[in-house]
Image 1 (cartoon, rainbow over the protein chains, first blue to last red):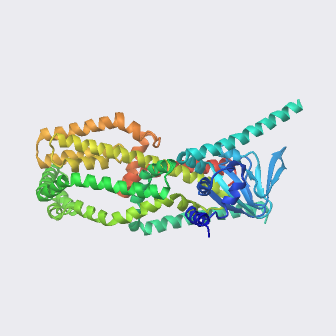
Image 2 (spheres, rainbow over the protein chains, first blue to last red; image 1 turned 135 degrees about the vertical axis):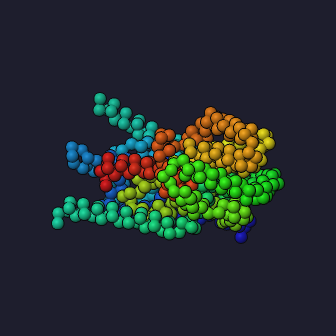
Length: 165
Length: 352
């Protein structure tokens, strides 16, 4: 065995195993390009939740505290329009929702319901703020990605409005 | 049965179950209350030290290493302080031990005289009744204090539990977040977000309060000791330490510290000048505390009306003595914030 390989094995033992959360976090655009060390820190604030078919993840207008990343399963997003529930999206493995609640304490804009048995990773505002205080460098990277995503969404909405006009 | 009726019944059942679980937890805590003291002390130390560990972690130091480093540093500082102050503390304790029977008999004599005077002047209390009641209540002070000082017993007990507290603090600081995560993993999905916010807010309220009060008490205690020492008062460390510790109780605490200092000096020397020196030093420290220290240390603490604080402390003292007085304000704040969050989550948004 070469010296480099042996060194890698020792380093991996010190760093710890990847587990089953870090590979999912890697697929999320918010955590793109983050080092293993940083992902390990995020893993500490991730809460694993399992939802049964038809179980509500959160209701519309409920005060939101965080986002969910789908590890396995299917989530349906619905919105009440003219007193009737309309489906606005269906999200699958690796997709995430509720990220706006990471930034502010604003009521949820839609209801999220599990279609089948769904495993999700929840990241919540109090833990994220705590992480930002403890690791400002990592926190600024996450906030930067979040801002880019929101800017992107705002640009798309503006373009759509222009097209309508 | 209608679906809606069934849902209402199920929700009521859920509330009863949650209530039973909470009651069970409280009952278990009450039953093992004797074992809780090291944990409570470890909790307080953890709240006090965690910002330092967080800061070190933020600077890129591994958390485990940061915790070990901080605990070693704390032990070194405590050892240096101990070495520096031990000769004076030893003198104070042995002097107090030697004079304790004399102080006790003096206190008992004064109380007896006061009671006799009261019985004589009121007229309706039969002679000797109050005196007998007092003796039943406080026993024989002279023999009680003539024994080895109760302070030494407390110190000895503390040294024994110190190692246990160190171990608990180490794990709380290192794995506190992991422990919290494992514990809240059992909360049902429906209540999870509300519960998480609740835990975070309670944690914030309690940690801010404890950090603020401890820093404040430490500064007040050190300043009082220095001031009393400079004025050549006997038992400077003892009176200063009691003033600092008493300062942990808002509003009522400083008054207790004052009374203790004045009484000890009066019993010890009987000198009015010494009494004024103690009053002057403690009043100056309190003034400095109100103007400069409190706004810096407790400013981020809880925002409660002073009158409410006094009521809450009185109720706490009535129910659980000194512990009740110390813990009543953070407990009140936690309950207040819990009710606010629960009301918002469950009632306002109707996902009950």
